[in-house]
Image (cartoon, rainbow, N blue to C red; front, top):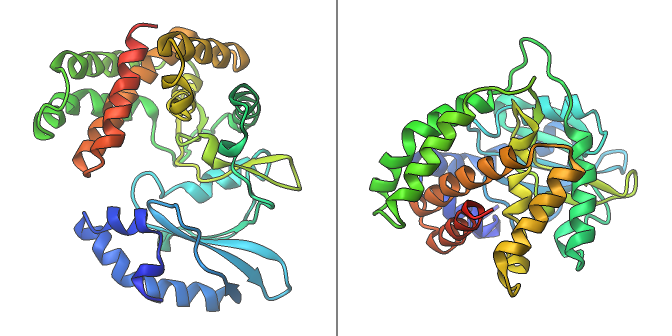
Length: 304
């Protein structure tokens, strides 16, 4: 398969990293390997992934599935472990896996319409909250998942260095505030649960087995409040087009805190700090427009 058939966002991101370029070079062989191993007929890949290539697949018995081949990093390494723990309750089922090779065979959610396309934001948020609540489950001692508090401690150390390295693209005070908040958030306040980490409206798909199923976990273990800001950062066009964006974001924050029974201030704190961290990452990889929108979100969270 020629490279132009791969998702353009994924190709653009992988080309920015030596490891990503090596993975792109190896990708045709991986596709052939798992097509043959799991006896699949593959369609054209889905167009919008960033760190994986995902194909609609048909199994030898005629069953429909999805083949996902991921660039292996700290966020994708334990996706199969999370899916096993979900066991299909609120998420797509894991059918086959080779975690060391970054290969997963997954249940295909059909019709597969993303929750992002539901016009009514309030209805979409209510559905998202219901699905996310079902995904939070206890983790046992010895689990493989990185801890959110450890990630927060690392982010606390990195904020100002990254802010300097990315050209001081916004006010220093915001980077300093994010660093201080991450340092505070690195102190655990509750027993950890399995976190999705990338739970947003495009990662919830309409299905037949259940009305909506989550996909694409980048699992961590930590407090529930960590998972909520990803939803708040999503569908921000609805927020920024409102007459008073701060009030619109505040209403969403209030809704999710109530619907998910999580502490509002913990959600707001994670939301502000994460928006700065992810904005800096976008600046690092050349996605300045998206980074600026995240920084605007962080400024909104400051006032809530």
